[in-house]
Image (cartoon, rainbow, N blue to C red; front, side, top):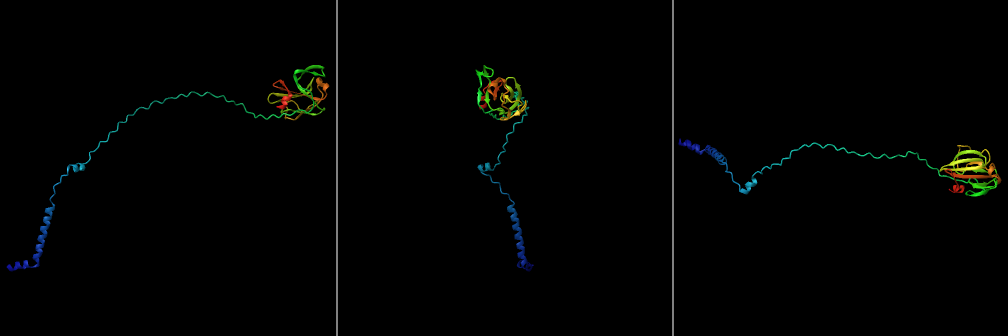
Length: 231
């Protein structure tokens, strides 16, 4: 028996047994030591306050929305604008007026309505509403300005006479012409156009020989032919 224990204690088995026992004791001690919970440490007051969770702040409640009725629309009364009168009269461009002398020659009798002049044919004193211009029989007589022929007549005193209307209320008269002038009533004539020829058909001025009796009116009033020709 003693030899048997010696053989156990003295052999390798002994050491193995010892190692297993030590391992069991070590593992048991490890779990006993680390299974204990350490007591919680109290923090200082300042750290405790810092660590304490911040209190929840209550957000202010939004005021309730009160629905108000929309105001009634205000009717704006705009007074009517006064109607402007529109002048729909067509605008006609006025053609520049060209004036030419109806005849070049010696003045036998000047224009005179303020003073009486002696008439050799009738042997009396009377006014003279035009100007008498001497020229050879048949000399062309020209329209002094563009216009429309109003009439072609045989006047008992002034002989063959052509009357022309012009813009602006003017009217020119060409008397003591030869018979049958080349224009008739309603014809449009231009300045410088031939409207007759110098004759001796005026019974009231026959003593003066062949000449043109030229007179001008504006709106029915007699005007000086020289002023008309200078316009």
